[in-house]
Length: 437
Image 1 (cartoon, helix red, strand yellow):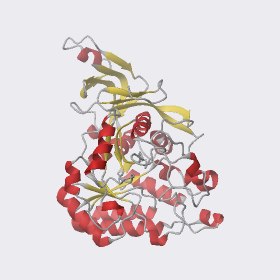
Image 2 (cartoon, rainbow, N blue to C red):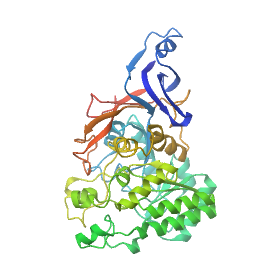
Image 3 (spheres, rainbow, N blue to C red):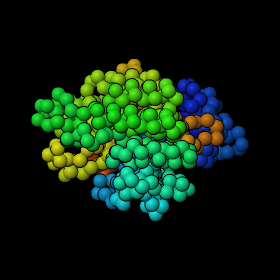
Image 4 (cartoon, one colour):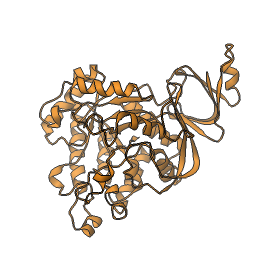
């Protein structure tokens, strides 16, 4: 039996913010008790083998859940693989991740899905995967969604390749509604984009390029919100970057659409100016936009329009990112800095409480996919993150294979100390390689 003693316990699902003890029995939460009573409860049944973690000064919350990550496995494992991606996740406090389908081969078949899930089961954390909406990411023919769900798919997405055919999207949503599953959308109309990854605006003008206007995102968000309203499908607007898109999601929710939205830590922390300082390390799809957009994203988090924080963890090699700006691939890694960025830019600045941040990073993502996660209630899976919400640290190295982050060298607040998944420690700070135990 394991007792986490004296922690500030944060459980958004139960509205709980208290100092106390968490008792873990096997793979489940046995209960939450007032501080000092956990050991007594653990020994009540004559149990002598009680492990105690002194968590005084630390916060304890449900293990973080990330519904948008790329582990590049199969096909591009020089960037990341499922094992190293899981280590990075555990080091960042994540106990559940949902992988995207844009691997090589694409996860549009039962065989590829089973490969990913089987490798994920060996990591120590909960590795789930979406399957593709369309066969080959071609946007023309639906995958066997029912069969892929039976094989373990968490949901469906063609993330990385926007779906341009509205009639096809409607068919996909109708099928998703029938199956009660989730569709996640990468919203960028490529017909409006000349150079991806950099916002069309003041910075792109300085660079002498056109870039990617917010219109590219806004137009598809508007379309898909209205199709979701019409079909009743449950959809996720991925990595929202535009303030106008926030307004569109707010409208759709008000009309009764089952629209969810996620924002990345880099989009609420940085603006397009970061491209001038960091070059391709600040290049991603959709791009970092203006300070006005950033503030509107934060307002969306505050009022619940944006439900979740998701990293869009996107590893690339140093050689790829060192290419000229317009040729380098888009994307940054994010699993190991997400919690600290949330504390630094949202909690410390008074936008969200720590409990609200945990809701965005654990409880709500679990709700979207209807996962048995995101709560510390009795009988729940013993998935817990322990972190120091006040500790400052400098971003220096990663458990990920890749290091493509504009936050290297940044001083952040909030440090993960221990991650527990299914009652087992999968990361402890002293073990800085982040290996599962």
